[in-house]
Image 1 (cartoon, rainbow, N blue to C red):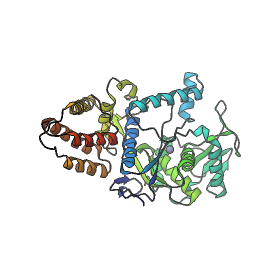
Image 2: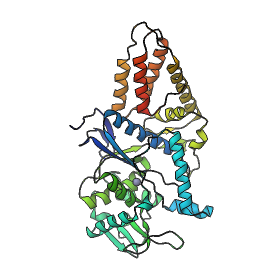
Image 3: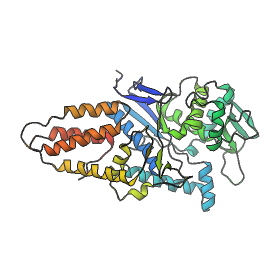
Image 4: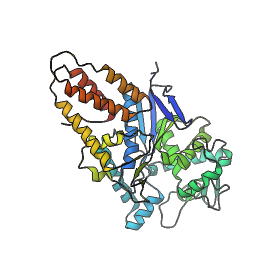
Length: 400
Ligand SMILES: [Zn+2]
């Protein structure tokens, strides 16, 4: 029998909360992962911790989750940085990915079932592009292969942007609308021809390397099938990346690419979006003086769809909350009747079922903890067992 859940998630495809009832008990989750050209900052961590809790909660409900997070290990940024540092691009990508894994471990992220790398899937990417060519959704020009967005009527259904509004975003995010070989400035590249001095692979259209979007369509389909239960990523990926993934995938298969698209909100620091281009980043490696729980509590105190601004004040608040939790584990249980926690339990799950409202869920655990400390004369073991279960769902560990 297929599991029914009480979980509602905000589906970016339809811009509303929808009940998460997948057709099978095995649930596929694909989250756009790192481009390993730099070190992990708090904005990345917010996205991965948010999806980590979703995956943990789905598993808790009883779904068998297959979780894939890709690695874009060939990319303009990697090549640029390798050139600037006079390093081999592969060495740079490997080093940054292994640093990411250390940060992921510090953040207590559940390992995805697969971490597919783009460069390990060039053959499959070429096959995917061939399907798009055969079906007449793609065209070749001067050694480049493009997706013809005019052929796909649903282009824009995720971002809900007009073609006019797509143009500047497309330019800003590397889709190169001014390329004279394109039929339409919004067409995007599926295969880009070799640039002297850059790595390349052979293909039916000549030597080159894959476009960014096609990597995710190819790898998600390979590991998870034609329709994903959940596709996620940072909100800045909605256009053009996810919009283009939908176009390619649905053009190839003729069926829906993802049941749910879930996007995390942007993180701000010093009044601006935390980003490499603005240089206002807080790196995970610089937060390792704090405990794992403190950093997760900092992140989970913010709802995944709510933009927020990082401050040291928030970090201190998270540390204080962690201090409270530490105390609870040390409280000795009394014998004076059973401490009743059903109300907390119910509210905790209500908060998670309402689009993963982790700030609310944490508020309930905070109140529960204060009450446990104040009722130490009662039997606390069942309540503590629940708190432990809640910790597992939120990826918190029992720290003393
Ligand atoms: Zn992607």
